[in-house]
Length: 164
Ligand code: CUA
Image (cartoon, rainbow, N blue to C red; front, side, top):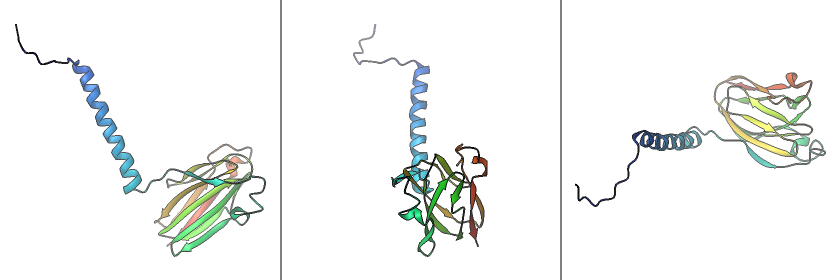
């Protein structure tokens, strides 16, 4: 008979394995988010304000949508989504440019997704969606509406042209 008075907790080896696996996964996920956010610059779309969908095409930044150059290589693009096009549907920037996209809709829900980039956001009438991207590689990047928005949905696309 043992006289050891130390309390001991029995954990089933199977359970212990899953506790350890869970802790490792949490550390991996936290590291992945940290690397994506700080080292790779990946952002999530952020609501950047509200607008009145009825008047958005007549007043404010979206009355004259398009590209604005803030500084060399730094741009803002105001894009108005509507059935069934993006206005403007084409923007051209030199390689190495950082573009912050501000997109809203004046009618129904659309989306704004740029092939080959992290830019993919829901476009909700009344809300401005914002997401930035740095275009390092010259070429044509297709913009598509990835949210079914009616009979012309498949024809709703545009492009970003990145010149060398
Ligand atoms: Cu706009 Cu689909």
